[in-house]
Image 1: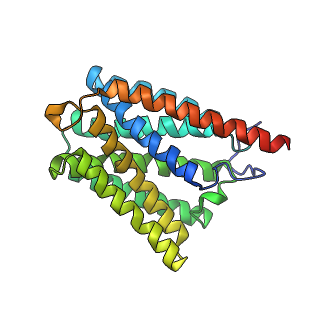
Image 2: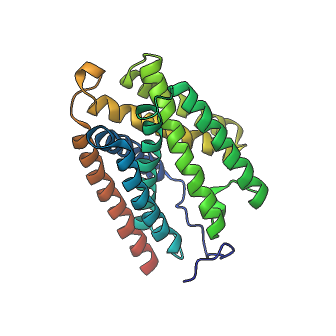
Length: 253
């Protein structure tokens, strides 16, 4: 299939927003945080980001080439977006010593700019409208910046503001409930509330991943970022595999 910007697909390239969607989204954020921590702290940060960027582009290209939504290619792309987006935020601080508050503000500006550009070109920010390659490119650009922003915000609250990883995790649990309640009560602004919740999943998952993987001296449980990354990866594979099998069964009926 040729890859053209105006290619229209039969259905959205993004899965339906269900509890499983949010569960997998939080798992990928936690896995991305742990994986980034492991590679950035055990290898040259710039080289780690470069290698992750190559894999990221390859997996996203695989997703773009898919004519319809498929669980394996979609969630593989989200996993690599999580890893690469997290590494970008980590390297900004670790390698270039940019304060968390500055990186959080910069990523916020970039995210707003992407949203404005996307809306001006396509007229909507709904993930249910991801039916062309161009919209999919906007979507993954947004998701990548959102991961980087969430990483910076999570580190800002946990480290710079001295809340600690576990307390930060519970803070973001409380915050992510707000857009849900707002939608349940008002039934309005669904797209805006979705993206607010989407951004908040990043620091939520990352905070709990750090709480498990960071050394005790740094406020974690000392399980090791590599062990946490492997455990979460295995869980993601199991859940995505179950989703893919169910989707194939539904199509066969």
